[in-house]
Image (cartoon, rainbow, N blue to C red; front, side):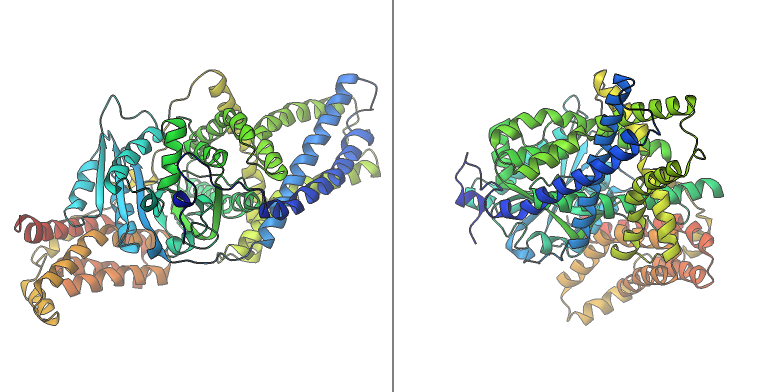
Length: 630
């Protein structure tokens, strides 16, 4: 297999998406033209010629507004139709061999003590050959201490520390600092560097077990022309029945709704957008689950001074810059990265405002991309429509509201005025509702979630209202951009609210049990034919995997899933028993007893005690196998 850097010398881009991709994108261009013409005529009938919103020709400004509204509606429906078709036509991704590449995960952290341990643990447990690089961006909590203590058990866990005034200047700067460290760690062999893949995970991000095999596949990094790839994003707390544990029933229902809508968003409409972009050659990078060849990052550093830029959406900016160098970006739907969904409206609004502003800022990258001539016609249309879409939404909001008010004031907006008006409103309802509500039904059918048919319909109607949240955050994003406010507003983690949840008094009943039983450890060593180094490896592995095991228990109990809860607690209990961690095994048994009685509230109340005993067990392992040895 040739590599990107060996096939294309330094300073030269890889192949552009023209050629065989031009034939692949032709159907998108043809369909887009056909849909636009059909929807344009339908929209013109509803808004321009029906008379419902005013007579054409009487007022030039109103006539222009009616034509513009019709054009915006036609473009929106065309884009949505292409997304639906692409989503329904998608095929499974082919896998490659994880071992063909060397993998490095970058995890930017700023005050992430509530989630960083389980994220590092999950990455190391699932991918034992990968390196994990945690970037501590001058955290004011215990993030750095947590990572340092994990390093005692695992040489492939690394800490990149940043200090003020260089720190806290944006996620892009944090990633660039890590790139410099990883680059030095790997060395300067050019051909060798293209086989190193750099992934970026959020501090709460989990990769699916098949992620690296699919990333190594023939349509991803197995293709030398591919410079970067993005995984589908899932919400890992989508089954949480109490996403706001300190709130009442109503707020938890709202929280569950918001969490589920975010899962639908990323796994249906957002995924469909990326699948369409695979066809148009304009796949965008996300902040979580992006992977890039080290040689491509080198190329970006030569061209732009550093790989990641300073925009709020440094991820999308990165993808645009990679395209401008002539590489292709790929998207993988069949592997995913999981992250927390936000059950709080205010936090979600803050997050989406930042994302929206970041995407708007990336419009300044388009001239360079156009000049590179790396885009097909379909790609040119897709990426420019995506960039102008927020502005069209605002125009639609202002003009649509004004036209509706004028129609009502002039007596033309009565839905009971005539049968023709009723048909027009019915058609408008179908055009407006179905394109968004369908995603709930598709989520049930294609995302593999255990959702009932009626729930799928309800989710679809709920998603319709959720989509219109864009009218809240895009005006804020535009206002922030126009006033020059571009500070990075970090979104608070859900887990930050759970740090003190639960009572731990019950653990005092277990203090007579040993944290590590010498007899059990001796028996384990005997089973391993007296190889103490194997025993030490098992014990150290237990310590590094412990945070992920605890997270599995917490997530299963939050979802109140009987099977998942039993499995998660059993995994912890059996591993503890094998190791001789008698106190932790007994604590896990008590959680099991609560689960068997379906008392999930009691089981969740034991989590803090379980976490404390687990931490004491890990410290005992450190004292015996790390401190004593050193």
